[in-house]
Length: 460
Image 1: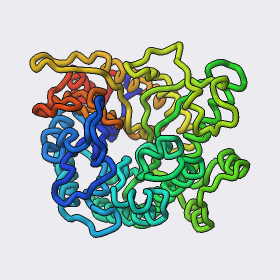
Image 2: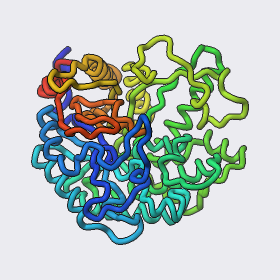
Image 3: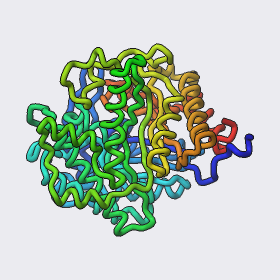
Image 4: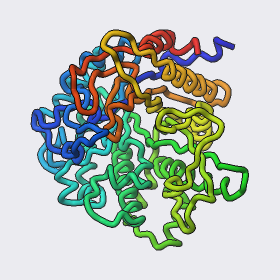
């Protein structure tokens, strides 16, 4: 039985990060401002100016990843670093940085994956055009994306366009799309979502037409939703959320167009989302080489708590209830490895395209005393159980999986700028308001990953 559960030698193990959460150097070497660069620290969050200073310390961090026996690193190219205004001249010094970073990975036997957008809209495009509300910004983004693909595709063979694309179909869209003005209506949400989908599909089509040895996939934040009870209304509400926030995105990524259920909702409610005839033709050509997702937690939904007339995009805002059957972390996120298996198996059964979980991890509150190793047994248990669940999906359920990437396995500020929510196997010595020395300190989980990945995860 053990022999049959061995993963192929080509299996990809690695780490995922975003530029705004790692690089720092917010005003160096010609970088333009992004919307995050001008966001101030609060009592419980940091600003984005330094992050973990990977711009200057990437060699050290890549050495740590290699020491952990990881063979892939998913990074983001900051749009405003390589094109300061978003739609103007390209900045060669910014491109040079990513050349150095990619080449440093390859030198260590680490495959790069590139994400093109992780929430940090160039400030110029947000102020002038209201971000992805504008077709001008769509065109500017596609121009940027093609430039990066042409430049790096000789060395980078795995790409995604948007991090967690289904967040653009939820309220979070108004925080991550460069949206500066408006009434945060369903019309605006659906318009921004469609515009970002057109960005993704145009770049995916471009890769398939021009770079045959490069793979591109859609990526979402997987919504593993359970009904609160067996009451039919609870079951139906959970199904609607998964249709709107999971299947609708992957359907579009794979050339099927938007979900009929979603489009009927648009029609019935008179929602304007700026779909043109030309868009429809472009969408027919879409295909995905893999389907990627992040997974941290599952969620439970009660139809009784959903206001009458609420759009399925908003069901989780008020309909979410506490899970009774699994443990949670310090932020109330359910620890549910079986939900991870469910996500992999469900999507592979439905689409028959290789699945790639590229974010998975647990946020914990941790401090370092300057001397003793951090004993993060809870993190070890989380990753152990989720990797085993993934192997169950592969070897018991028949899913094809390309790899497993943890989220932020070197500590970075969370997506809401909280350095005290730590995901890393490596501690970075800073707090929200005190940069200290930014020293990298391996935790107990670092050595666990090192041992497990040395044998390609076979012991699990």
